[in-house]
Amino acid sequence: MIEYLQIFGQEVYKIVFLLVPILVSVAMIVWLDRRVWGLVQKRRGPNVVGPFGLFQTIADALKYIFKEIIIPASANKVVFILAPIITMTLALVAWAVIPMSEELVLSDINVGILYLFAVSSLGVYGIIMGGWASNSKYPFLGAIRSAAQMVSYEVSIGIIIINVLLCVGSLNLNDIVIAQKNLWYVIPLFPMFVIFFISALAETNRPPFDLPEAEAELVAGYQTEYSGMMYAMFWLGEYANILLMCAMGSILFLGGWLPIMDVYPLNIIPAPIWMISKILFLFLLFALIKAIVPRYRYDQLMRLGWKIFLPFSLIYLVFTASFLFYFDKLPKVNF
Amino acid sequence: MIVHSIFFYFFSIIAIFSSLMVITSRSTINSVFFLILDFISVGCLFIMVGAEFLGMILLIVYVGAVAVLFLFVVMMLNVAEQKQSWFIGKKSTHIPTGLIVSVLILLELLVVVGGWKYKEDVMSSSTLVLSNISNTHQLGLVMYTDYILYFQLAGVVLLLAMIGAILLTFRERVGVKKQSYFTQISRNPSTAVELKDVKSNEGVKLDD
Image 1 (cartoon, rainbow over the protein chains, first blue to last red):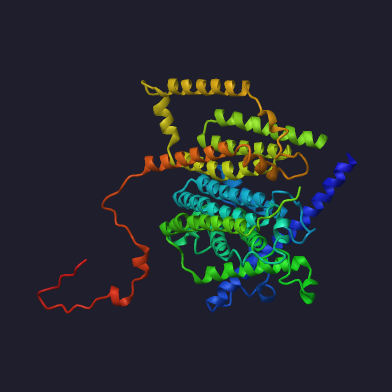
Image 2: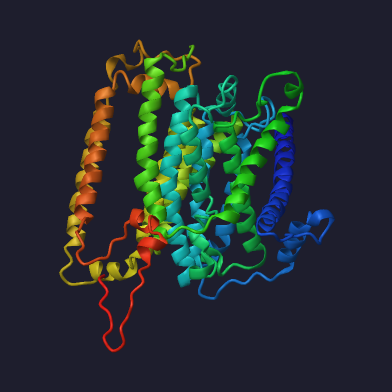
């Protein structure tokens, strides 16, 4: 029994030391997002609380904690409370398999990429449940839009993942990273990287695909009835999901924790720093796109997902498979 | 081993409880939520016996896509009203039909499960080596060699279902204004704006 308790204690220790940095970096990333947004629009962005306004998000979070949680009288209370909890939990749970270096990963499972894909596809439930349980028009419309959008773009993300897996021959995230030792997949699979990036924007409901919370039409979409800490949980979950998508992009295409080149001054920099800088690079792209691209119309969004991305990624999949087969480059599995 | 069995009972109790709740709960939305819980716990059971690939695919396909569409339908349709008209109306033909279909399915299940036989050489198949190959590879090795025909046939059945669904819901709408993205995007001032000299008291006819 003592043995089990020890293992349990160790795991809890590891989980805490994974979650705390993620929550802190989510807070910092919100600040960065607003800062970049401000810079693009020639504003200053948050710069009052703390040095460079770094503590702005923490101040916001404190404000949310002390605000009253209002539950609408006609809402389905259980589902209403469950929705933000699910969003937040799913966003954090996925980080268990993200490798920060070859050893620095909470659980190095065989089907890591499938786990990531499964967890990110469950994320839609938080939004659907929140929208439905609010029992009001705008949240419901927002939830329906968001569900359709996330299900559509998951399909193309799935096919993009298959493209990468064809080149790797393993579903383990560390294997995917190590397979890119000589060449990052962003070079041979560049079109897939672009489509992955755009689909990730749609999957996380970021602008230009933030139709679920289009403030001009739907007030705030599925979050309209939420207040206080429950709203903050939706918001934290959303940013944790964005970071997760960036991590997924850097693992699949940018070589994860590998340095740019395996030469002297670059390969003494520790692996986690490479991983974090790649995540940050992708996040900066996310933030820039939020600031410079106008919102899509709903039919344009659906057309892009189903009529352009899906056929294109399928064709590219056939191309990748034929190329690998013809040049005998298919990954060999040694038993 | 104790921990393993504790988790096994934990997930199986949740699975059984939630599948009972699916058919007994009064609100249809709750039924769907319990169905999702059921899928998730069955997925966890799959992972516990070492079939990680199947467990994850169950989560991705059933929970991530199929159940979302279920939820969609249940939320959009007024199911309570439908129920009223189905079960309380005088000439309800739904209950007998449902009974016939469910009895047929039960019989089919009995026939299939009762006469279950593995292909004789499935355990000694040359392609399947039960060693330290990962579960996904094993599945692929069996599925794309011994069972390739069934695999392809399953794909064809799914394709047929998809085409059928599209045919059933397809209707050509007339008199609806359609937008072409290319003409919208390729508009520029010289093609979009036209200057007209309007004479007083005569007006001008614009072609549209």
